[in-house]
Image (cartoon, rainbow, N blue to C red; front, side, top):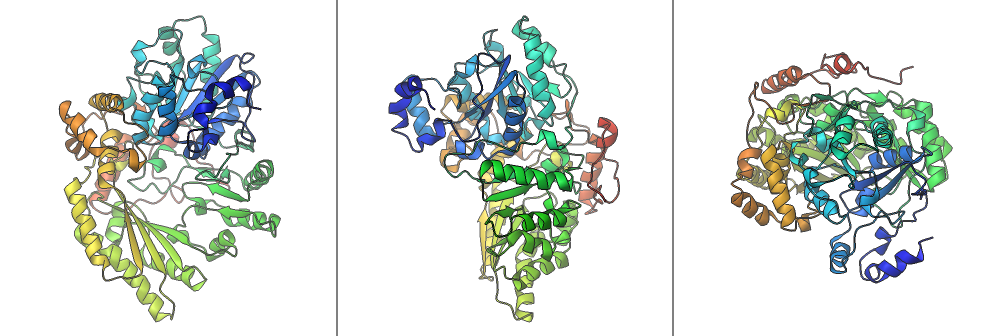
Amino acid sequence: MINDDFLSEYSDILLNVERPSRYIGEEFGSYNKDFDSSKAKFLFAFPDKYEIAISNFGHKIIYDLINRQPDLLCDRLYAPDKDFLELLIKNKKNLYSLELKRKPNEFDVVGFALQYEMCYTTVLKLLEMSDIPVFSKDRSNIHPIILAGGPSVSNPVPMSPFIDIFVIGDGEDVDIEVLRKVVELKHLDRFEKIKELSKIEGVYSPLFPKKTNKRIAQLNFNNHPVMSPVPHFSSVHDRAVVELRRGCARMCRFCQASHINLPVRERKKDDVVELVKKYVKNTGYDEYSLLSLSSNDHEKIEDILKELNCYYKGSGINVSLPSQRADKFSLELANLVAGEKKASITIAPEAGSSHMRDVINKNLSEEQIINATVSCIKNGWNKIKYYFVIGLPFETFEDLKEIVHLIEKVNLRCRHDGLKYPQITCSISVFVPKPHTPFQWARQNTIEEIENKIKFLKDLKQKVKNVKFNFHNPKMSQLEAFFSRGDKETSSLIYEMYKNGAYLESWDENLNLDLYNNVALKLNIDIEKKATREYYKDDILPWDDISYGVDKVWLYSEYEKAKNAVSTVPCEIKCNDCGVCRNLKTRKVLDKL
């Protein structure tokens, strides 16, 4: 039950905001452990709204693993929406942890999940509202250690003035080690504490910079949650989630998630099935998702779905999978996933031309895409979703033309086979160069170049009536590129934007591009110049202290192969000696017969 003191203090605020259930805690499945009896207290802070944050699977893992330790505690903090934030400020109230209603500065460690670059200003606002100094140098012994993990710490430099330690790679083991070390180091002052924490494998501290290798966690039954807090209202992914696989052996050259999550590790079929059964039973969800960067690459994906479909037959419990890979498209798999509801199916060609698919190492032919699409249409799917990326390195307008030509060829096959044309939706994003990928050296297209490409595609689209194009905002993509490869200068823009009220900027309605341009101009920072900069082979990159195991020389060789549209075989077929297994003394784990 929510305590009376909290209600008396915050009831007026809660009654005057949209969705007060975001801020009350007490969800079914939350731990609510005793604060005072815990040796170390961890506050997991997700810098986005409740419905986004509570859906994040990584935070569910850490929350569950820490709370399973009898003497450790993990509570949660999500970014309040602007209406709640404004009322907190007006009424001079602090933020509080969701479950125990404790001030964030009472915890030993506050850990931020940096899932995307546009959350940086929100992190600073959450620190301010927690009575924790924004800059690491201004904190004293009374303040928590501020930790950050997630994909965006692949380049820690932009957030280095604000974060004490970064967790590089998988957090399952590291976060618990950090908490154990914090208990052990309670007698030390803050500076010495951070120094000792920075010695933990997989921990990088800007105060004590060193070459840091990522940590790798093995996927076993015991480090996966079978229960997590069930939100009070529908979240963005309102279902039970079981991680099928981590890492992707295909290594598309633009894809950071593929390169920083190597090697591939698959959960055993029997473990996946049992985890799904337990998770669904414990949470009451009527849908479960099998999470992976490439779910239909799992060695036993069809066996898993057959067994689960049989188990849940007639129960109304359904399965969700990410997009189908056209080169491993299986009609049987598609039917296992869809059951009776065949509303839409998603395929990710990424690029329209075979030339560009070779450039990005997609290993996917036009025939495979068309065959997979037409096979779906023949078997009852009338809505098709495609994912494409534009602005890729070495892309020409002829390559862009092939996006529309591909759809025309699908229509031609449908007409030939006597099929009704499908409704096709193309989600088209803008290439953002990411650290630790072969395209980390590549330039991003200018806004003008991207806008010309968008106009070009829109003009071509007029010939095809059954397709809709959804384009990502190129100006937001430019900011993402600026932050993604940011140097020390980037921090000053983050700080000044925060001081100017920037908050929850991953939401379009909160992103003030004019303010960004004005603040950048005052700081003499050219956002477009930095986003569109091309690096050279021997350049020292801002993120060179961080290693995810892949050899930098190998990454550059892949960049060279991209220039010549030469593809690389996925490591599941043949080891391509990227360096991960050798450098990190690990290996891929596949659920082979």
